[in-house]
Image 1 (cartoon, rainbow, N blue to C red):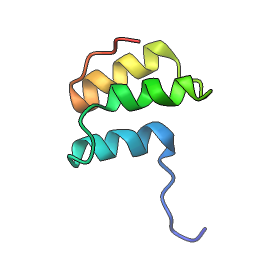
Image 2: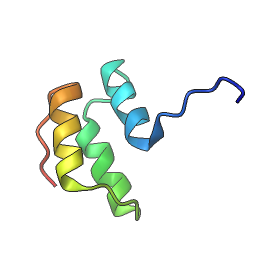
Image 3: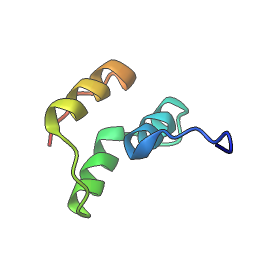
Image 4: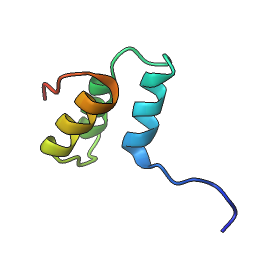
Length: 58
């Protein structure tokens, strides 16, 4: 291990939202889905609400 934390794609998006680097985490997730990435709707809805207070509107 080289000591680099692994947070995943959603983790990066949520961290950017919490740090004020993006306006809407949900919009970025929608863009990523349109590019071909898969995210489970229930999981996205849960983490968006709990972590950044956004509602999921796919």
